[in-house]
Image 1 (cartoon, one colour):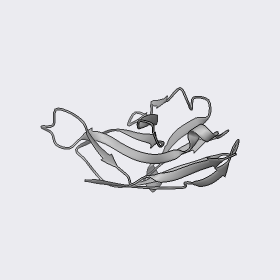
Image 2: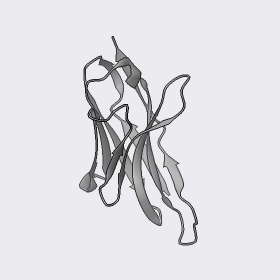
Image 3: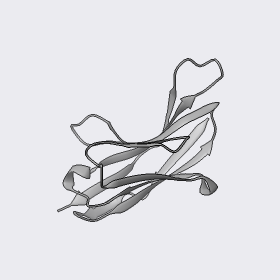
Image 4: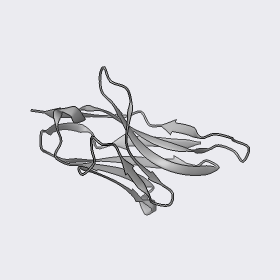
Length: 122
């Protein structure tokens, strides 16, 4: 199985920036993508950014132009950089690994980290 541990959250001033990191250990039969999600109070969990095994990336409209997801294979880390933070970025950010557990799996399975709190102050 896969274990994910997020770090880098904290209190950040508006217009500031931060880098979230996700340490990855373990494995699954086929890893398809690494993702960052976030969930704020009163809101649904949303996909912030994703990166596939091939390196293609995707970003939510709310963070396009302000976000970069990257991999460091040597360190088994996935990072999310956010700049020009606003109050709307306040949320718990979750690292996610998505793929197939076995050769017989017909759909993807999600592994989740515990999350790291990001609070943007005015």
